[in-house]
Length: 79
Image 1 (cartoon, helix red, strand yellow):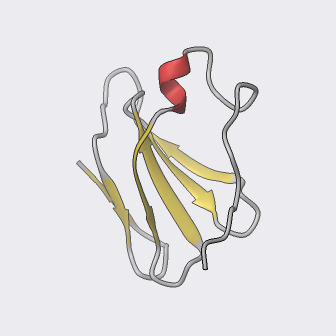
Image 2: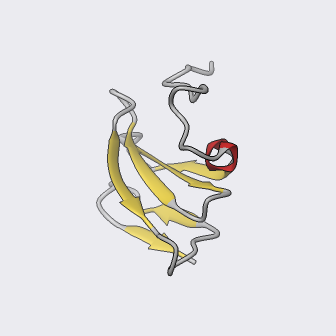
Image 3: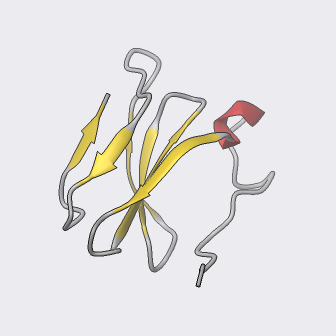
């Protein structure tokens, strides 16, 4: 069964609407972390239990198109 962890709405998005577009998402093997990559070219690691942002990668100089987490959620690979 699916479980809704958190949502992004107009208040949770950045100043540009494109920052709300999620291109890809994945779980760590142990289910502790979620990684999303959005139209803004940033990867965000989330705590799966609380929905809080753990880490953000990418900026105007480094665009990220995809990301994956290790099985324990401790490491991330981006491209």
